[in-house]
Length: 335
Image (tube, rainbow, N blue to C red; front, top):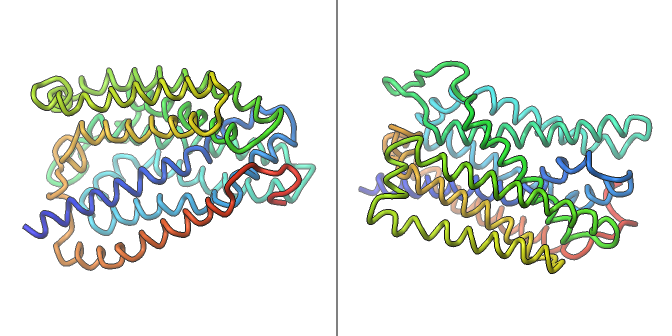
């Protein structure tokens, strides 16, 4: 029984790590997505300075989520990696290339436009691949004999592409609302104007994904439309409607903090909605959390270190954001 409980505790830890990565790195990637829409070099530099103290630390949570999956759910890892090998590898390469571009653009004048495009390209590829991988997981992975039994291109479907577009537009919305909160003057006004179309696009894409998802699997459908499960699941759409209202109200009133928090709430609630759809499956439609877990001894051993490590990461992340709170001074930053 203890092992059963541990497997669910670990599923919660990994879900928390992935969600934290999305919340913290989503607006970071969104800033890169907004680069082609900027007016000048000053605007791009201030945008990058708004995340330069925290951008690399945000990706710690991606490492924790991926490493935790490998350590405590090895069967799930062994199935997911072959199924999603291409989008995951492309995402990792894009994040590496994006990190290089972040550093190199400050060291050159002649090649700065090239590195700016590399920063945008890395952000776009990473965002699209994250959404596609998520969509491919939600639509289900074919398993036979505890191994991946699908084809090389099973991850590339209309639904997964829609999820990729939704995540990309959503990240751009997060980036615009973050910059609206952190900047001042003409650049803030520009970011505020960009937040509107990306917010509308995010709501439309989330609506399309939400309508499509229940029809991917009968289990998903019953979770959302069969009584009494539907009574609990209905809380998520209600909260989503509230977040959407808060987002557009904040933008209309030219508020700074509310649009960003409501934009983040959309991602958190979307993540919860996905969890409702296929819980307790680790890899839908047939691999459960319990079946995918490592032996009890491994779960206990890894949990001891995680109980110490996760609070430490949370503390230094919170401290970094606290130290660099407030508006960004265009005269100071990462040079």
